[in-house]
Image (cartoon, rainbow, N blue to C red; front, side):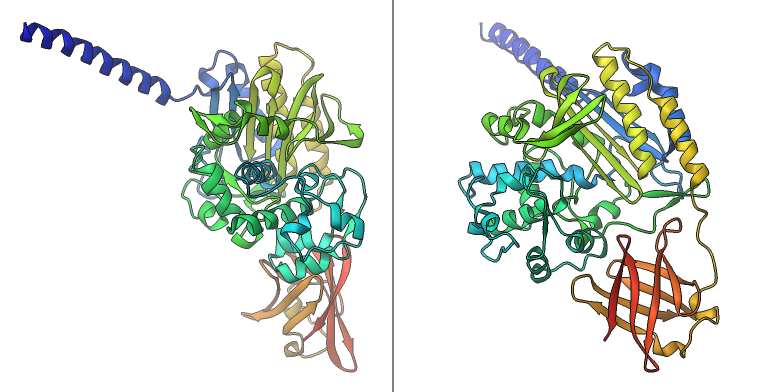
Length: 505
């Protein structure tokens, strides 16, 4: 009897173990690639063609439907220098698509009883002062997350996102001179301010709190707010720019201090799939509750409406918390893209259909075109729509833009062009502007260069004491030295298309 019982019980145990293993294998099974998908395989050659004709070295894509990843793939190269391919685990910088992540972080703080979305920001940041005293007193985290008042300041955006020379002292001083539209208007400043709220309330830098409270619990282990970790990873997509028809690594790349709360994350297509599932499944993933279902409803519902809708296929109408809101061919649609030098990203949801996708690209302007073509192909295929083909229009646009593109800037370095009115040593040193930070003029190996925080470019001659700073070969910044009383007193440099004077220290 005992032996028979052991056999029976052992058989039941074996069947149970086999069942668990089968379940684990099912969970661990790799989602289909494009070529293996009955829905998307027809796009394999088309999307490969888009890389060449619209323009990008590579991209990755993930699609979620009904809480399952139904497509996960990579196309092209993550780095033209090595020729390494894009994979689902390649890390891409996603720029402004960071904003919904930090909206969820703020929501989590609210649910943990540490923050009220409708309390004055000034309650958490007493140093906050805007040029509008009434708005200073009533501005809330919710207002920031839905871009309700259009608060902006170019210097803050530049220092945060490009030079990295932002400090809290400079940030809050510049906010006192902020431009405010007093209507719904998208701005990075809303989320860099929110990042400071998160730090004040949680006691952690926004990216560390986000990682501990949202990313790790959601299983997003290859998502980071540190550029040093992203670009230190062997499987990373470098940003690329096109120079005279050839892709090159961008000389402008993110650093830890330019990874700000409005645009400071790197992630992979695989992790992006988990992010989409978390949002579509109302704050829960794999049985783990990250934020409440009610909180996710707040994130995705309309919080503010733009003064005027824009777009045709995808109509932009306003904002939820972090997410943009509108319609896709008439269906409720949540979205957020991101763009920076040499990189583009697109995240979007059709909440009522349980569909979401993310496309990560390692080129800038034309990369958005690649993402547009891929995303419309995917949505229309899943919705069984045949509403026209975007690819030919984007190909024509890309061809036109290439025809109009300025040639890469080349020329003699200012130090060797004989265009300086003073001895070269008179130009070397630090120049400062109270709002825009400092620039250093350097003389290395017989050549002049300029460093503006984390930006560094060669200085080419453009006439007597005039120069071009070539950080990006296709987009130089113009400048000139100002000589007074036989002394180099200042330099003028084009920043965000306007001249800024930096005084010699």
